[in-house]
Image (cartoon, rainbow, N blue to C red; front, side, top):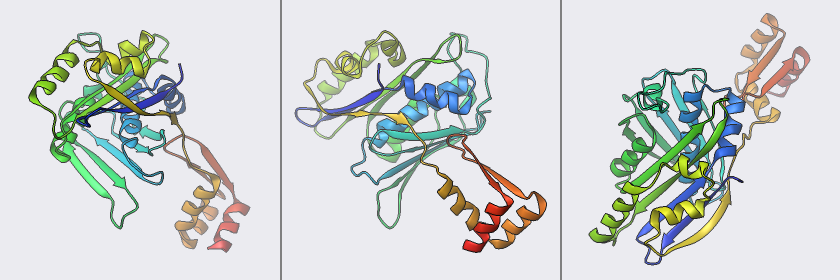
Length: 292
């Protein structure tokens, strides 16, 4: 199944919903970063959240950055997303892992840590980016984002994110959804949404069973007349390039580059987001100094 997300709303504009299947995207990230099973789940949930939240932005040039900073062995998780379904991200300690919980599930909360915060920054092309922040609640990421929406955005939201890791440590199924209750929704309708959510299977289980985002949507909100507004392909893609890395090196200044030439006669720069390595020999470094 191809990875994609759908975005929809009910006929009276009281419910906003986004659903994504992200199995291939998360597997691609796992291969790029060589993550442990628990780190795969943590990064995969965060990347899925990134494409869902990014799809809420209006303009192509808008950029969403999410930083999840807990006190667990994972370190920090960084996600950068746009509204076109493209996302990139990394986890500080990709090899960090923990034993499974007593219920057999991966201990993402323990890996991320409960003490810390989620910070989001939306660059909407204005003078200053919009920055929001809230404390971590469980470290499981979905609950933490629901808490973020409630306390930083004053937006009641149900967030579900799941990654099922197979025995060979590849990603077997991944996906998620965000449901937001908008002004004008009645208490009765809220109860109906909550009752439906209490009955459904984990989102990773539904996707593992072959359900599409449209089918997951019907499973969650079948009692509502939801209109699908758009369908967006999603992918893990890094926009790094040799030209961008050259600019980073040039920003170090002539003295720093001369020191690198004298000490090593070469430089290697690794992109955090995709692990691509860029090599520069002595002559190339000298040419960069000339261009400064």
